[in-house]
Image (cartoon, rainbow, N blue to C red):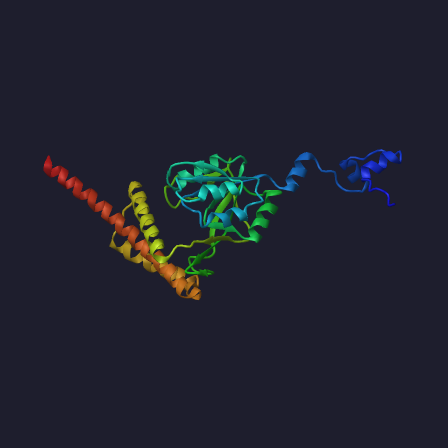
Length: 302
């Protein structure tokens, strides 16, 4: 009959030898002894992933699977009527309901729900590549910056864009919330930090399932919000700005940044971006004219 297996620590007292602790074993082996803080650092700092959602049932599962290794996942939902919340809970996410506040304020609210100081902020239709996941975990073992950015790769018309406006779309998403956070902008929000921003390897994959019609409708809403934001800041535009901005944008992204190498999807993506620029300034001009007419009517009435 074979002898039962005995663990190393159990063999020692049976042989009349002292049981060695982890640090003492390391010392006898000639290895460095790690303090508690250093052990925690090598294991990686705890990370909170925050995601804002609205009717994202078709996309959010891939997002959640790509961050399953994180110890805290928060989904801030603004009233989904589909299975978004149920899918999130199945992937051990905490779901918090919050009426829509605008992109910047909504993301700031999400960051405030995080349990950990290090936060990764994602949209529901984004997911981490394996390389980016590994980069984040490696960097969090010994962070050198207060925030980190990484290239965002966009899938458009069934094709991953590799040039032009679609890649690399550098985007700061990982940060220490005591030193960085989202701006309050209702649209085109950005991460603001007083420290340096590091760069990580690996792509953040943005895989939208929107068709052209839905994409254009979304861009129309965005340009309206942009125009209102510019007007609230006292900005103005004329015909020159409205015409030249799209032209320079096309030259930059289609030719200088090789957007033509992405074929028809690249051309369509850049062309829509140029039209967005035209629409934004046209709407800004319209807002200015409405204000002028309102003032004239007010003066006439007086």
